[in-house]
Image (cartoon, rainbow, N blue to C red; front, side, top):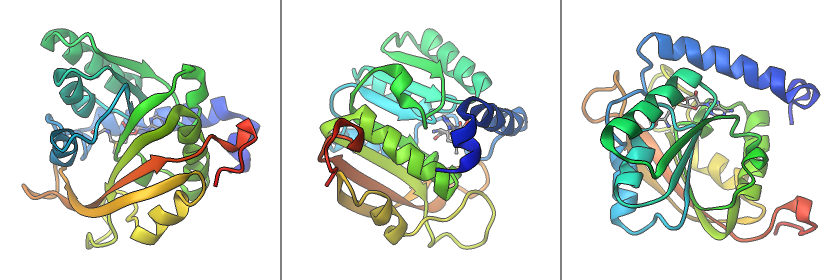
Amino acid sequence: MDDRRRASPEAWAEDARLRFEALYERQASWDVPFAQPAIVELAARGLIRGTVLDAGCGSGENALHLAGLGFDVWGVDVAPSAVARARESARRRGLPAARFLVGDALSLEVLGMEFGTVVDSGLFHALTDAEREAYVEALARATRPGGLLHILCFSDRQPGDDGPRRISDAELRTAFVRGWTVRSIEPARFRTNIHGPEGAAAWLATVERTARSRESGDSGG
Ligand SMILES: C[S@@+](CC[C@H](N)C(=O)[O-])C[C@H]1O[C@@H](n2cnc3c(N)ncnc32)[C@H](O)[C@@H]1O
């Protein structure tokens, strides 16, 4: 893990909060007023199970879609203004099963919960390598064995360098080599406000939690 974050996770989370709040103040490129079609399709394919965590939920459209289908959903995001909007949308749409918290997805242990499904639409690709390592460890503690993690992220097939880091199939496989089984990594689209109606080239990775976290004494493998 990155030394700066290890020294002070709170100061690090505050930096992330300021960075993302500033992006939400201008119209953030990812902040579309509908659930990502790739996430909608996951639910239609029966790949959402149990209580759901939406990590880096933003203004909550994915979580709200899943709550509308009857799932209990917890959305966590470091940006308070996005969480406030998500809560307001849940209230207006009459979806009490969608709950939203301001929090750091790299410190999920504070929730004290285990989830059957974790959805990540755009968080993994927003993290540095060191943050990603801490995030995968946090996910391991928060996902029950047999639980599914779905990551929708920009792919290295997306030309140009506008927007977030591009992620390769190999990077996804490397991140989940211990304690997880990669079920599939499929080409998908990530809808944004700037990449036209088709959206940007993305990967939709589905990874299954296969072992308890290293902290519980398991070798994770
Ligand atoms: C690309 S946006 C995607 C938002 C939302 N999932 C969507 O699809 O619209 C990434 C989100 O991750 C949040 N984020 C970044 N770092 C975070 C962290 N450490 N913990 C929780 N949320 C974080 C940002 O505030 C932002 O809302």
